[in-house]
Figure 1 (cartoon, rainbow, N blue to C red):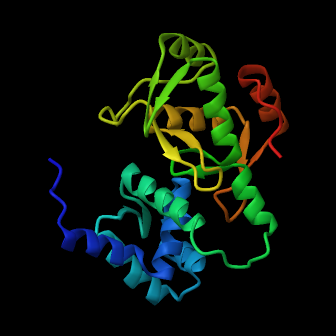
Figure 2: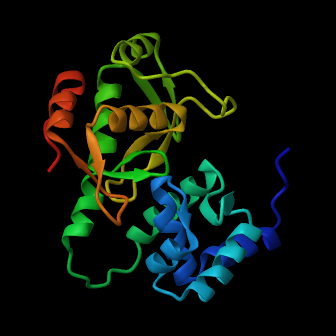
Length: 233
């Protein structure tokens, strides 16, 4: 059952996010992977002891979940809804007051292709979304979407697994407003399945120490053949 949200609870969650180090920790986990406390301390540029306090606060407010494997504890975003909230805040922040900051290669790589929790974002994510809607494989409405019968056949034919799996309550098709492109990209179970397929087929690879992705030569061929998408630049 979903809890009713009071102003106090909302303010508590906002306060948990509203710290630079904690915001950096949450951003680092937006690629959907689980990281150790030491890895997250590096991303937040704080000591291990300071990171431990921040992580405890984020777990306490149910923004992060922690898993134990042997001597190690791994932290991840608690739910897809947390990822949607962070992406939405990034979209709001991107339209805020302009501050001069030279654009570097990491910025461009993130804008080109990245993971947004467990689905694809950036130019790559929005291009795939637009390709599927243009072919009427997916029909989008505000913050939601529907997979057509023709779209289901197409995706199954190219080997994308649309079975619900363990997370059977998750929406099949929904959208996120992409903070860099200002257009929607696919989320939900469909978005996650597309992302998983592209990793398994070697179409995309992770860029070290970033949630940015690079499209491989195999991926460029696949995007052109199945989605009629030219190389992302």
